[in-house]
Length: 432
Image (tube, rainbow, N blue to C red; front, side, top):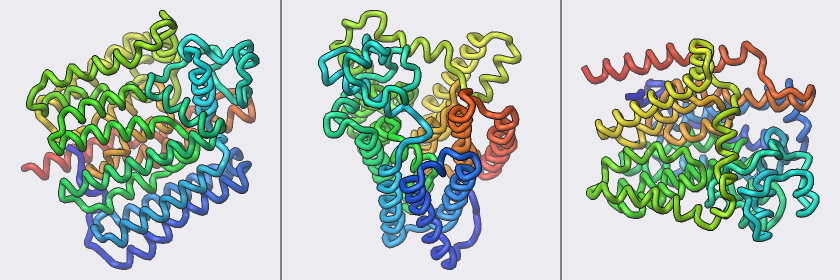
């Protein structure tokens, strides 16, 4: 079990002015990203801006973590909304995923099958693709599930530009914050803890700033868990299916949800809904899963445990199998012991971040959604260091090579082992 408080100490009212100042800094960063976008793509200024965001995050958490006052929650909400608005206005400089969303949505609105229509030069010319030169992996068929495709089509239909998708992601990000507050109240925890999500550099930059669809998937996952808390089991399973139909990651929560259902057969609705959503796209044939297969087989970036296992075994497939088995065992143990899903989510998120071959910055948000319930120092560390992995994108702009310096992994993942050991020791000590 992870620790409950990242910085145990007596409460001090002097923290609040510091906290308010820390909430303002992301707004300044958003303003810079909007008015001076080149600052985001220069290594030195990017590091300075991101370091400021990380410091302001820590300061805001330090100030508001134990607060349950409405005024403080309102301050977090107000400054958070302003920061998100400014990041939505800024161009998405560090990731091109939003341009793939534009393509998939455009394909679906034309009545074509996105799983069979990759953005090749021929297809792009025929459909008049927006910002084709900014798309990545143009030869790969889409990996995004059907509900994500529907959202892409809707957002692009409103305004066929990146900003529409960034605004949509920001709205789901705000919804996540609201769901976290409701879950905190149900558990008698201070609502100020939501600042760990609301002021996170990863959450701000990746959703409002780059429009990643993970915000939508996380919102459905949190809705599923909150519905489960309220005893609305059918709604919980349906929301979990919604999460899986945006990104596949929430499927790992199925055992935890199933163990808490009065009628565990209801979990069978999950695969039924997922399968039903794919029916309109079956005409793609093998292409339906081709993109996902290529992603699972060949993509690797910024990994940790996976890279160690691949080096030790000399076989990437063996490394992936070992990680999958270990993750399944951990999820099964959490489900069998009926660990609160809001706490188990942090453990599962850590397993993913450390085990995945591809640890993109925005993937960490799936774990950060559960940080307010655990206060895990390990998650705080990863949430503070992984944003700098965008240096790979900046390096690509300058040299054409998408890569991080070899020492970067030691900075990101080196402290994880001692931090986890300390958390486990604290947890055991608190139970004895």
